[in-house]
Length: 194
Image: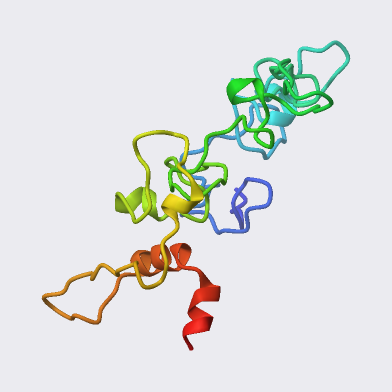
């Protein structure tokens, strides 16, 4: 009897578990393909992928592995959205209100002064930290449309910082609070103060 130096599976250089064993610790519960002299791991029906353990594409003449339903990635029929943006000349796929995101088909950020497309929790990427924090300065949660820019814009002197925990340290301000403050102030106004 020949004692194998490494595991019986292709590409595995680990030593077998013990005397008379052909598999390493990693492959000990895996089965070997039933085709003689094949050292591949079983995929299904006691066969490896190469010998028919995985279904092939249902398209006639195609020998690729089936990935989506009964077809390979090339022959799979993906659902096609036929609705196009209602703006004349726009070839993009329509979303909300029969328009693409660029032409107003997406949801707007919940921050009143922000006109950006909402991506996470009703907020744009810039204001995404607010979706975990709760209401913030300048938020308008009552409607999906925002108010006028004049009503929502706060100057640096009107904006107050909320302290993270005033009982421990009156100078400690949380990161999201600073981000909200910086989003709402006019940087040109700050420069004029210095």
